[in-house]
Image (cartoon, rainbow, N blue to C red):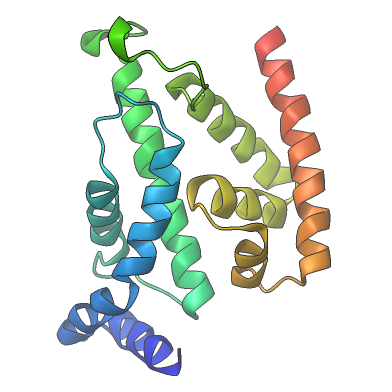
Length: 187
């Protein structure tokens, strides 16, 4: 972990070889996070976990915008990048020129279990933005859990929270988001 922190600091300084040394250290973890998130997406999702990781990596290593304090901060930034990519993808799919709300349906492969729809991802994103004004830590915890695929313990650890505090934030955020999303549905 100390090596990872040193490499993160070197990347922040703009040292060329640092990002090349960083990728092998974090790729498997980023791939796991993306796979967890993509497992909850609809079956017709065109974005693959590997593509999600690569797109997030490009955003994370953009020169001049890199500032990571530690491992937790890096993975928090990765979860945020993945969230934004999924939101952009959902918005792009909703655009009228791309078919709007129309969806292909192969009746031979219909699954009864529900999965996250583009509309739900957009509703959650909108509610998360409002929650961030109310309680930034709770919103960050939700991003790490929902978009980053972290467990409650992992997300709390990434944010520097005790397990008990993370559970308290999670309970608050879930209740707050439920009320907000129900309010959106009723409008």
